[in-house]
Length: 193
Length: 129
Image (cartoon, rainbow over all chains, first blue to last red; front, side):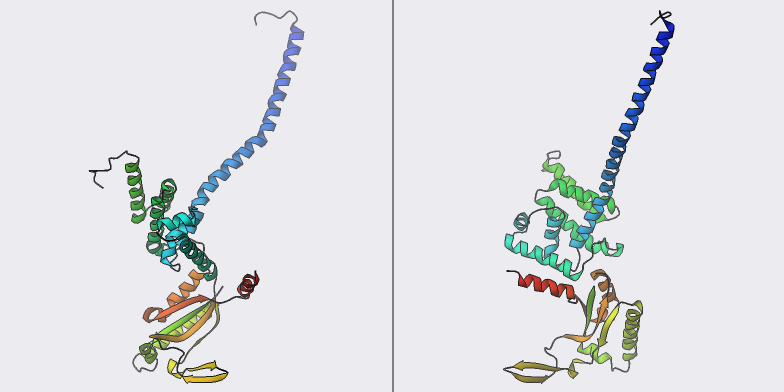
C-alpha cells in the first residue's frame, strides 16, 4: 500500500481492530496449545525414563534367572522365556528336549524363585564374574534361536551397563560378527576371526 | 522370610569339639558366629546338637514302637546344629550361611520354613477339583 489512505481515521481504526483480533487469536492459540505441548513433553519424558528403567528391570530379571540357587539346566531357558518371551515349545527345540520336560523345568525354576525367596536385584559387583557367565549363555542361546535383534539389543544393553566386563564385550563382538557375516557384509569363508 | 540354616559336620569335625589342641579354636569360631547372629536381631531360634552317636531314632511299625540307637541314616556329614533366621530374602540368608564356620570345613543347607500363608496356599491348591 502506498500513499495516504482515502479515509485515514477509518483506516487507522480498522487496522487497530484487526491487530487486536490477531493478538487475541494468538493468545488463544498459545493457551490452547499449552495443554497439548505439556502433554507432549510429559509423554516424551515418560518415554525417556522408560528407556532408562527398562533395561535395569530386565537386567534384574536376567540376574534372577542366573542365580546360583537355580538349577543350572534351567537358567538359560528361564531367561529366554521370561526376558525375551520365547515360548516353551521353541525353547525345548533349541535345547533338544520335549516341550513337556521343558515346561516342567521352567515351572520348577519359577516355584524355586518364589518359594525360596530369591530376590529381584542386581547382585553385588563381587558376584558378577560368576553370574555374568550364565547371562551370556542365555543371550547366546537366544541368538541362535533366530532372535538376533532381541539378543543383540540385550548384549548391547549389558555391554553398556558393564563396560569393564570382558566376557560381555566379547559376546557383543561375537554376535555382531555373526550377524554381519549372515547378512553377507562379510564373506563367510576364508576370513580371520 | 524365615530360613533354616542347617550345619553339617563330618565325624572328624565332631571330634574337634573334644580335641584338646583344636577345640578352643572350634568353639571360638562358633561362639563368634552365634554371637553375631544373635546381635544382628535376625535370630528366631537355633541350637547346636550333640554328636550323632547320642541320637535315638523311633519309628512306629504295625502299631509298635521301634526304638533304635543312632541317627535315622548314616551319612558322611551329619546334622550338627541349626539356626532359624528371619531375613528379607535368600541372598541375605546365604550371606549368613557364608559366615558360619561349617561353610568352610563342611556345608550349610539353607531352606525356607513353611509359613502359615504357604500352608494355606497348599491347602487351597489341594482342595481345587
